Length: 158
Ligand SMILES: Cc1cc2nc3c(=O)[nH]c(=O)nc-3n(C[C@H](O)[C@H](O)[C@H](O)COP(=O)(O)O)c2cc1C
Image (cartoon, rainbow, N blue to C red; front, side, top):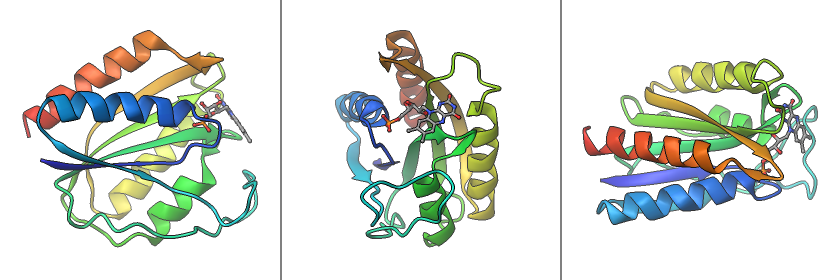
Protein backbone atom coordinates (compact mmCIF):
# COMPACT_ATOMS: atom_id res chain seq x y z
CA UNK A 1 0.00 0.00 0.00
CA UNK A 2 0.96 3.61 -0.50
CA UNK A 3 0.71 5.24 2.92
CA UNK A 4 1.14 8.93 3.67
CA UNK A 5 2.15 9.96 7.18
CA UNK A 6 1.07 13.60 7.50
CA UNK A 7 2.38 15.33 10.60
CA UNK A 8 2.83 18.61 12.36
CA UNK A 9 5.76 18.68 14.77
CA UNK A 10 7.43 21.74 16.27
CA UNK A 11 9.73 20.24 18.88
CA UNK A 12 10.28 16.80 17.37
CA UNK A 13 8.14 14.44 19.47
CA UNK A 14 5.52 13.79 16.80
CA UNK A 15 8.27 13.49 14.19
CA UNK A 16 10.05 10.85 16.30
CA UNK A 17 6.88 8.75 16.50
CA UNK A 18 6.24 9.19 12.77
CA UNK A 19 9.75 8.07 11.86
CA UNK A 20 9.35 4.92 13.92
CA UNK A 21 6.04 4.20 12.23
CA UNK A 22 7.51 4.80 8.81
CA UNK A 23 10.32 2.34 9.51
CA UNK A 24 7.91 -0.37 10.71
CA UNK A 25 5.50 0.08 7.82
CA UNK A 26 8.34 0.02 5.30
CA UNK A 27 9.54 -3.26 6.84
CA UNK A 28 6.05 -4.59 6.07
CA UNK A 29 6.55 -3.68 2.41
CA UNK A 30 4.46 -0.49 2.25
CA UNK A 31 5.59 2.55 0.28
CA UNK A 32 5.56 5.25 2.93
CA UNK A 33 5.84 8.99 2.45
CA UNK A 34 6.40 11.22 5.47
CA UNK A 35 4.86 14.64 4.86
CA UNK A 36 5.70 17.37 7.36
CA UNK A 37 3.30 20.32 7.50
CA UNK A 38 4.74 23.77 8.15
CA UNK A 39 3.24 27.15 8.84
CA UNK A 40 4.34 30.34 7.17
CA UNK A 41 4.79 31.93 10.58
CA UNK A 42 8.16 31.09 12.15
CA UNK A 43 6.40 30.47 15.48
CA UNK A 44 2.77 29.46 15.09
CA UNK A 45 0.71 29.91 18.24
CA UNK A 46 -2.36 28.01 19.40
CA UNK A 47 -4.90 30.80 19.10
CA UNK A 48 -3.93 32.73 15.97
CA UNK A 49 -4.95 31.57 12.49
CA UNK A 50 -2.22 29.72 10.64
CA UNK A 51 -1.16 30.06 7.02
CA UNK A 52 0.36 26.86 5.64
CA UNK A 53 3.49 26.95 3.49
CA UNK A 54 1.77 24.41 1.27
CA UNK A 55 -1.30 22.17 1.37
CA UNK A 56 0.01 18.70 0.47
CA UNK A 57 -2.30 16.63 -1.69
CA UNK A 58 -2.81 13.05 -0.55
CA UNK A 59 -5.34 11.91 -3.11
CA UNK A 60 -2.92 9.30 -4.54
CA UNK A 61 -2.55 7.52 -1.19
CA UNK A 62 -4.24 4.24 -0.23
CA UNK A 63 -4.05 5.08 3.45
CA UNK A 64 -3.08 7.90 5.76
CA UNK A 65 -1.67 8.35 9.23
CA UNK A 66 -2.14 11.78 10.77
CA UNK A 67 0.06 12.85 13.69
CA UNK A 68 -0.03 16.10 15.61
CA UNK A 69 0.59 17.60 19.03
CA UNK A 70 -2.07 18.82 21.42
CA UNK A 71 -1.83 22.57 21.80
CA UNK A 72 -3.77 24.57 24.37
CA UNK A 73 -6.39 21.86 24.92
CA UNK A 74 -6.94 21.53 21.18
CA UNK A 75 -5.60 19.92 18.02
CA UNK A 76 -2.56 21.79 16.72
CA UNK A 77 -3.68 24.70 14.53
CA UNK A 78 -1.33 23.59 11.76
CA UNK A 79 -3.02 20.18 11.46
CA UNK A 80 -6.41 21.85 11.77
CA UNK A 81 -5.57 24.23 8.92
CA UNK A 82 -4.45 21.36 6.70
CA UNK A 83 -7.58 19.33 7.46
CA UNK A 84 -9.70 22.36 6.56
CA UNK A 85 -7.90 23.12 3.32
CA UNK A 86 -6.93 19.73 1.90
CA UNK A 87 -8.91 18.16 -0.92
CA UNK A 88 -11.42 15.63 0.44
CA UNK A 89 -10.42 12.01 -0.12
CA UNK A 90 -13.63 10.06 0.55
CA UNK A 91 -13.30 6.55 1.89
CA UNK A 92 -9.55 6.66 2.46
CA UNK A 93 -8.46 4.73 5.58
CA UNK A 94 -6.94 6.99 8.23
CA UNK A 95 -5.26 6.31 11.56
CA UNK A 96 -4.63 9.23 13.91
CA UNK A 97 -2.12 9.67 16.69
CA UNK A 98 -1.67 12.65 18.99
CA UNK A 99 1.27 13.51 21.22
CA UNK A 100 0.69 15.37 24.47
CA UNK A 101 2.59 16.39 27.59
CA UNK A 102 -0.09 16.42 30.27
CA UNK A 103 -0.21 13.03 32.00
CA UNK A 104 -4.00 12.82 31.78
CA UNK A 105 -5.93 12.93 28.55
CA UNK A 106 -8.74 15.12 29.79
CA UNK A 107 -6.23 17.99 29.81
CA UNK A 108 -6.54 18.59 26.10
CA UNK A 109 -5.77 15.28 24.43
CA UNK A 110 -9.34 13.91 24.36
CA UNK A 111 -10.72 17.20 23.05
CA UNK A 112 -8.02 17.41 20.40
CA UNK A 113 -8.86 13.86 19.27
CA UNK A 114 -12.54 14.76 19.03
CA UNK A 115 -11.59 17.70 16.81
CA UNK A 116 -9.41 15.50 14.63
CA UNK A 117 -12.19 12.91 14.30
CA UNK A 118 -14.75 15.56 13.40
CA UNK A 119 -12.46 17.07 10.76
CA UNK A 120 -11.72 13.62 9.31
CA UNK A 121 -15.41 12.84 9.16
CA UNK A 122 -16.10 16.08 7.30
CA UNK A 123 -13.54 15.02 4.66
CA UNK A 124 -15.13 11.59 4.25
CA UNK A 125 -12.15 9.73 5.74
CA UNK A 126 -12.67 6.27 7.23
CA UNK A 127 -10.95 6.37 10.60
CA UNK A 128 -9.56 2.89 11.40
CA UNK A 129 -7.68 3.59 14.63
CA UNK A 130 -6.58 6.31 17.04
CA UNK A 131 -3.77 6.49 19.59
CA UNK A 132 -2.11 8.82 22.07
CA UNK A 133 1.57 9.11 22.91
CA UNK A 134 2.46 10.75 26.16
CA UNK A 135 5.62 12.82 25.88
CA UNK A 136 7.41 13.75 29.04
CA UNK A 137 10.89 14.79 27.87
CA UNK A 138 10.66 11.99 25.27
CA UNK A 139 7.76 10.15 23.65
CA UNK A 140 6.79 7.21 25.88
CA UNK A 141 8.47 4.10 24.44
CA UNK A 142 5.64 1.75 25.46
CA UNK A 143 3.05 3.98 23.82
CA UNK A 144 5.06 4.07 20.59
CA UNK A 145 5.40 0.27 20.55
CA UNK A 146 1.71 -0.16 21.19
CA UNK A 147 0.55 2.23 18.49
CA UNK A 148 3.09 0.97 16.02
CA UNK A 149 1.94 -2.68 16.48
CA UNK A 150 -1.70 -1.68 16.17
CA UNK A 151 -1.32 0.56 13.13
CA UNK A 152 0.84 -2.05 11.39
CA UNK A 153 -1.91 -4.64 11.88
CA UNK A 154 -4.64 -2.27 10.71
CA UNK A 155 -2.88 -1.48 7.46
CA UNK A 156 -1.95 -5.10 6.91
CA UNK A 157 -5.57 -6.19 7.09
CA UNK A 158 -7.17 -3.50 4.96
C1 LIG B 1 1.82 25.97 22.66
C2 LIG B 1 1.73 24.60 23.29
C3 LIG B 1 0.56 24.21 23.94
C4 LIG B 1 0.47 22.92 24.51
N1 LIG B 1 -0.71 22.54 25.11
C5 LIG B 1 -0.84 21.28 25.60
C6 LIG B 1 -2.08 20.83 26.18
O1 LIG B 1 -3.08 21.55 26.25
N2 LIG B 1 -2.16 19.55 26.66
C7 LIG B 1 -1.09 18.69 26.59
O2 LIG B 1 -1.22 17.55 27.04
N3 LIG B 1 0.09 19.09 26.05
C8 LIG B 1 0.24 20.35 25.55
N4 LIG B 1 1.43 20.74 24.98
C9 LIG B 1 2.54 19.79 24.88
C10 LIG B 1 2.65 19.15 23.49
O3 LIG B 1 1.43 18.59 23.09
C11 LIG B 1 3.69 18.04 23.49
O4 LIG B 1 4.90 18.50 23.99
C12 LIG B 1 3.87 17.46 22.09
O5 LIG B 1 4.46 16.20 22.17
C13 LIG B 1 4.72 18.36 21.21
O6 LIG B 1 4.85 17.76 19.93
P1 LIG B 1 6.04 18.13 18.92
O7 LIG B 1 7.33 17.93 19.67
O8 LIG B 1 5.89 17.17 17.81
O9 LIG B 1 5.85 19.56 18.51
C14 LIG B 1 1.56 22.03 24.43
C15 LIG B 1 2.75 22.44 23.79
C16 LIG B 1 2.84 23.70 23.22
C17 LIG B 1 4.12 24.12 22.51
